[in-house]
Length: 113
Length: 114
Image (cartoon, rainbow over all chains, first blue to last red; front, side, top):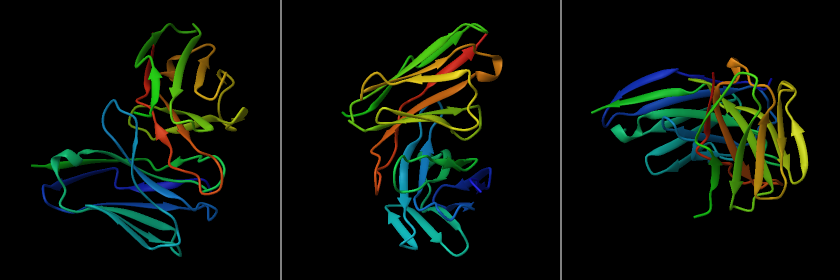
């Protein structure tokens, strides 16, 4: 019930292409869905987050699409750049009290120049 | 800049020798978390402090303890490290309450057990 499933495990995209990472959750009590970016040897950093009252959120080249009925959400990176090469984690939590994040398994993204 | 600071960045300890990792924050957040991240895996929550209240995750081994002497500092104690405890340990903070804010992570402490 607490799991967040993320795919693919790894992804290679050409520079300028669109990177798409998908996540699915089970616990309907989750109402906060962030995406974190992590570079090797660093802590995760918040990239973008969405709450289920909207179906899409865009910040620059990064867009989250959210499908509440399917309990799925995805990250789209437009015009992918080599500097976007990192590991991306989706996560889910409840938006009240402590933010106990349940992370997906992670996607290692490589952008080829 | 306000941030979450973890010390040390790298820690080598002997099998069975107690070790303490530290975390400090200047964000004045009331919630502090400790996550364990093993190689090529997702971070896994060990426990968190909500103000002064300690909240342990059900599957966190007894070998792991935590202390929060004040709002700014939090410590992770590993009483008898085993080889399986080698990992990156991440401290995070957030403001707890309705409509909680994002969680900010520190740079992590990479623990090696020899």
